[in-house]
Image 1 (cartoon, one colour):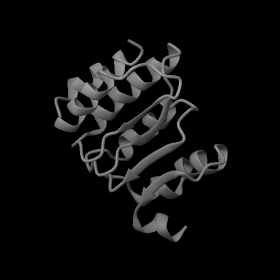
Image 2 (cartoon, helix red, strand yellow):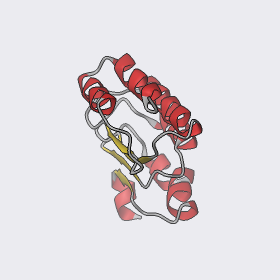
Image 3 (tube, one colour):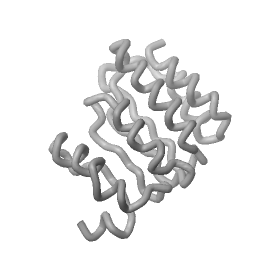
Image 4 (tube, helix red, strand yellow):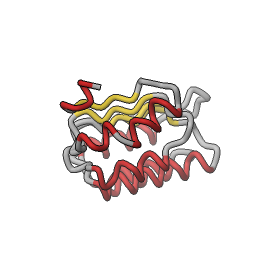
Length: 136
């Protein structure tokens, strides 16, 4: 199956939200419309996100279904240490990324990451929420 690397990475976390998403993806019928990966409040940490990011890239490299939307919101264990790696792995097909309430600092939301997401991709649908981001 085209999504098998992602399904395996989600199952490897052994976290309830990830297991539920993996089961949903496993039963998904392939379609050209792509897929969404919403893992809000999944208790993910940086290592989990790195494994999931690698799986997303593997699916994209194999010309599998295209990821359209990713939400890792409210995963406070996901920090600045993992966010750069995540965004280097994301395919160009991603149109939305939600990172509300993660363990990200204001430096990430105001620096190079914001430039890459908003200016390079010409898209403001990447959602951060922290005090500094709201003032920009």
